[in-house]
Image (cartoon, rainbow, N blue to C red):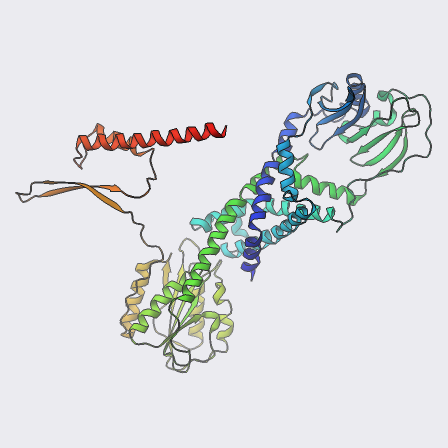
Length: 575
């Protein structure tokens, strides 16, 4: 059940998840870029009044000062009847550069937030984030179960291949992915009113102001006492309007300041829920926490690989399940069978061995019934032999097709003539190697069933060990078994004979030298010329002729040249 909770949602939203992850990884760099471009004064060094005075000096038509979470100070002002925005130095108020958000980053942000589909896309993004929470939690519990407990998370993982890569990346990225998905789902819920949004507060506009002569912005008491780190936004009053006020937003709330007296006319504090919601936004975007943004970005970058390795593992299990379902079926019912094979498997790999055993027994004239261990019947009326082939999952746990076996064993009524043999599959790198097979073997013994053969243990699907076990069973039962199943066949390469030289055919030490060429795709086109050059520089035990060596070397260099030229033309075209 837990595997389905992890796998099915992933398959359902895999493209959306990869899109959110890749765009999120790009956006995670922005807090670092903004932090690098910003000038951050020390706390207490610059007040809001001091900053505003500097800004007014350099930008007489300033309308608004905004300070983002990364510390950048942006001034919005009018010039030549047009609106402008500049990034300024808070220490001096001087312009650093015109402020213009990148069109590319705006597009990436829109793709991340809504898949470029407006509110419909925002709903899809929120649902995807919710699925990601489920995927992260179920994946974490699956990983803990597989490696044998929470303490094993801090120890080196064992195994190899796609499962090892998937587990290692998951351990590295799960906290970052879970944080991103939780905060993203919460922000989506805020967007559509599931929770009340208290991120922004608005103070009541004052009924009356002093109406006196406006004071210099640098002398206003409230702004003088306010440190720059507190500021979020300062909106200037309309020039020559004594009834207008300063609008101030800080990280603690928002209010209005009299431009003559410099005192608060009204102020609305930010509620605790609003502060929490602002922190959720910071944790999701990394704004103001640039180092967290990099961590979240690195976690997001693992999603394409996690998606690929996870989908590939699912497909291997699915293909194996289809294969074992469509392969040899039971020709007899369990009531008629004299031999029962029960299979416990997590990834369906064990089924290949079971089908090979079933085919050999049927060929020898046995009536064989094969099923999952979970399908253990209460009674097998004609069974004389019971074979259990099972893998072990995690810290000695039962695989998915055997998790009910020991419970069902309690009501199992074996015939007195029944004998059993258990064959375990596992990996010796793990401390609980074939532990579930050993538990099953002990449970069957405690049930009073006679052993046909001692428990067999197969390391990493070894075909040699499987064949040896089959020979032992054949010796005990007298049934000929030629077990040949090999889930990991030796890789081969197709070669073409291109030359043959015979030496000393008239004597007793005749020698023939064969030269082969690979007919498949050359996986090392840039390395082969170096190898052939080395062969050209020294004699080898192969007695390769000089013309052939140079011919091969020239052919390889020509291939390298053509490939390099094509890459160069492609790069020029893209640029």
